[in-house]
Length: 123
Image 1 (cartoon, rainbow, N blue to C red):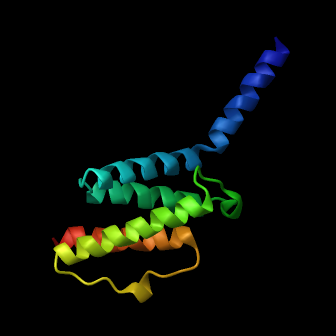
Image 2: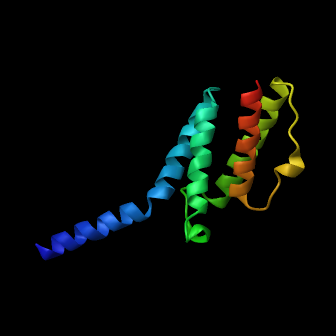
Image 3: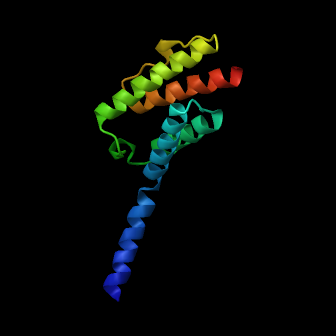
C-alpha cells in the first residue's frame, strides 16, 4: 500500500511540475489550429502570450522542454512571421522587423504575437 501511495505522489508531483509546459503546448496547439482555419483572434493570441509569460517566470526556464525540435520551432516561427506579414498587409499595417528579431525563438514568437495582437486590435 505504501508503494502505491508513493507512486501516486510521484506521478502527481511530475504532473504538477510540468503544468506550465502543458499549458504552453495546449495554447500553442490552439493557436496553430486557429491560424490554419484563418480564425485567429485576440483571445487566442493572449492565451498563448500568457502561457509564454508563465513559462518565462519559471525558475528553470532555460531547461524547459516543449514538444518541438529546434528545427520544428524555427519552421513554426518562420510560418508565424509570414502569417504576421500577410495579416499586416491585408490590414494595411506595417510590421517593424527590427522590433521583432531576436536570437531566442520564444522571444521572437512573443514579439510576433504582440504584432498580431496590435494589428487585430486596430482592424
